[in-house]
Amino acid sequence: MYVYVLSQIMLFRVMIRSVMFTLFGEMRSIMITLFGVMMRLIMITLFVVMMRSIMITLGSDDEINNEHAFWSDDKINNDHALWSYDTISNDHGLWSDHN
Image (cartoon, rainbow, N blue to C red):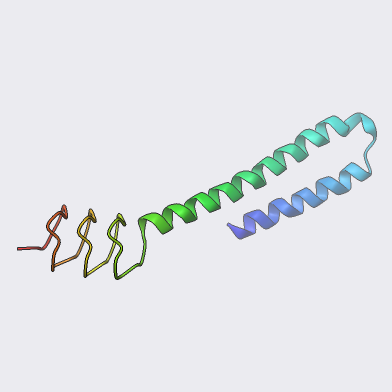
């Protein structure tokens, strides 16, 4: 992921250098290309931030009081997890080991 971002930044630097040595007739196509590179960098950043927030929400490692995590390894007080390994007080788990 980071190698891809670095390669996009290097491509951006090459495009800036080519803008300096180009006549004004080709400025329109170069600006369109620069806009595409900038939009790609913005989309990569948004994707990384979004995936990080989803992973924090779904796969939380809170071992004490994470009642609303989706995939939680909470062994103490996780009554509302969907896939819970709680063997103490998990009455509402879908696949529960509670007997």
